[in-house]
Amino acid sequence: MGKKQMNNKDIKSNKKKKNKNKKKPIKKILLLLVLVLLIAGGVFAYKVHQNGGGTSGMLATVLNSKKDVGEIKVLLLGISTDQENVELTDTIIVASYNPNTQKATLLSIPRDTYTGKNTAKATAYEKINALYGRQHRPDETLKAVNEITGLNIEYYVVIKTEALIKLVDVIGGVTFNVPIDMDYDDTSQDLHIHLKAGEQKLDGNKAEQLVRFRHSNPDRYGRTTSYPVEYGDNDIGRMRTQREFILQVVKQTARPENIFKLGEILDVAKQYVLTNIDFNVAKDYIPYAVEFDTSNMLTETLPGTVPSLNKTNNVSIFVYDKQETKKLVQELFFDRDIQEDGNDESDENQVKDTSKANLEIEVLNGSGDSSILTKVVNTLKGAGFHVTRTGSTTTTSKTTIINKKNAKETLLTNIKDVLGKGSIETSEASSSKVDVTIIIGKDY
Image (tube, rainbow, N blue to C red; front, side, top):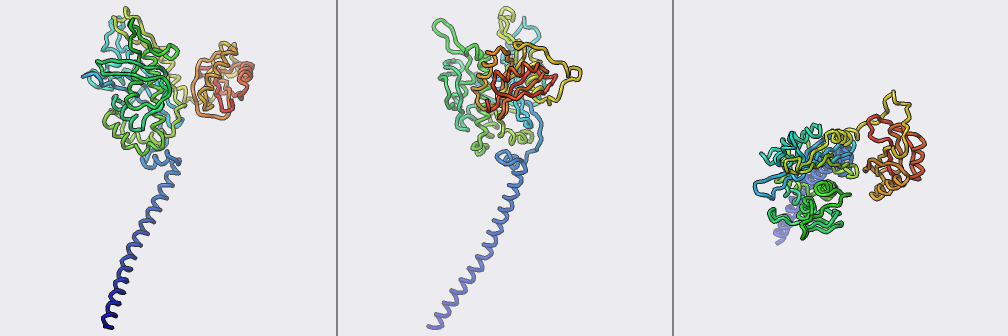
């Protein structure tokens, strides 16, 4: 019995030793894996820090993005696919983004813009929104837009209606302030728009209704209502709403929590978006884009007129103004990035003799409060000054009054007195389209 007991004890002891010997390699492997993960995590964290840190730095590291990429210009085409065998570009927008200055621009092209040679013999097929539908060739529309704007746009993005619906739903809806009550029905397109004015969260279906609205259902007398004139009626109003909605979509898609939905967003793009932008180009802009402040975006519409039908072969068309378009394109896509480092020597000492009413003033809101801009403009107008341009800029602490065209010092001092704030600076530039730029700061 004693031998048996000893043998049993020896067996148990040997088993324990064997188990301990098995565990030692496992522990070593686990320690090695932890060490490798810690080293990899440290390297990753260091690279994220080198790439600027935060969400932007993380994306730049994951995507292996290049630094110091230049401005990109893209033609955005929103395609309506609700009518059988017909695809028209309801939305045509030139978009530019400069990651180095974090400035962007949206220029809407009216869908009825005439691309033919003789307006007296106009046809619907010569409208810019019909060019894509002929052979489903976005390069035809791109060529026309380049001729109109004088820009050398290389890239296009064709977005079908379904893409907007899906994207908005993927990011959980978009909060937007609907400008007016919208009620419109078109059974031929199975289009039904019913939205109430005011801020609300829109799902994909309601987002489509918003961007497609032009005017209301006719009343019993056959009259329709559209956006108010001060907002921009019919197509002008719709284009403004489209641009402002795009701003909100960009802003709300770029939220950090939506990074985890990147796969779903890319799936939507693959299925409903056609583009000639290579992913290796696009990925370099993603880390910059998530840091973009939508207040740095300028939005405008192509200038022009709508001639009477008896002058255009009874076809409703939009005729763009070539001279005004040239000026606007210069202001939007070139003047914003000019380093305003001095005027021509011949004009250096010539003080511009301008009256208060003729002084052209630009007001840029850097206060972070959108309501401040209207208040400042009204204050200046009430004092007899002429505000020709307004916009938003990066948030800044101090209000600044910048002399761009060597205006009289007395007028600048008068502006400061009217505002009750502001330091006066000089940054003269012959390319500037205004005499004075006022940047409203948080101190206002």
